Amino acid sequence: MKKLFCIPVFLMFFCVSSVRADEFEKTHGLGIIQIDLDSLISLDFWEAPDDILPIHIMTAHRELLYPEQAHFTFDRLKQDSIPAWFNTLYFYSGIESRRLDINCLGENGQYFQTNLKSESGKFLWIRKSMGVVFKQWIDFYLSVTNLEYVSDTVLLYDNPTNKVQAFPFFPGPGPASSRIVLAPIEISGIWMKVDIIETNEFGDALRKNSGWILWRNEKEPLVTFNLMGC
Image 1: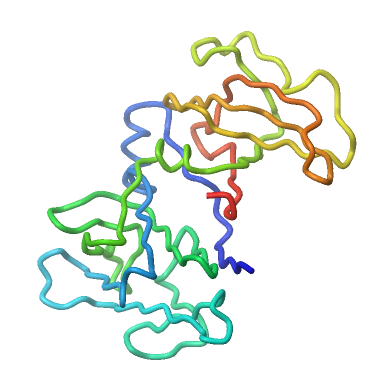
Image 2: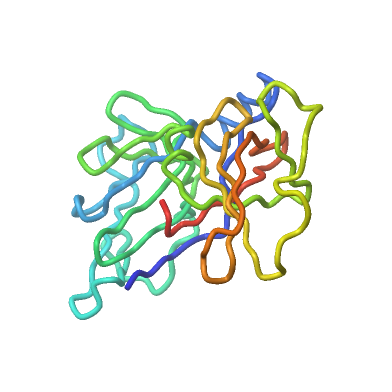
């Protein structure tokens, strides 16, 4: 049995121009910090890498009777709700493992800068250690399965340099109960090469295709991902 706590956000996006790319990195970061909470007793958050003491301390506890569930303690105090500053990409909890994913804005020596902000508006830092792994966006995407397209315009391209010759994922609509999932193969800038699989309500593959899609535009991502599959 698995339990998933998630905050409804889409996968992040890169901007088309170099100026917008800088704006993206300032807001959404260089990739994802994946934190294995089973390897850490607690996770400290710092307002600056040279601070003497952390400003926040988070601990995730397992329930002995219900190991798939997890409860957080913040700053040594039990809280019924997650504090406003703790706005992560998502937290995954299962019997096998518990993992927290946070956007990484940069690094400084032995610290990663996150997109979480303290009450004073400063971006918080976490220390590099065992159980703390950084993945660039390309590595993060390629570790995800069962992407779904969220754009109304579903177009497939035969190569990532030709935006003129585009065609639908499949010729003609499928059954009303069918679902289309994308399996990433390769990423090149704003382009993603994918296998496109149309399945029925039982998960059986009905049709398959492959090609390149635009996985983001200048404002938002065009794909979202299955949390249980990454």
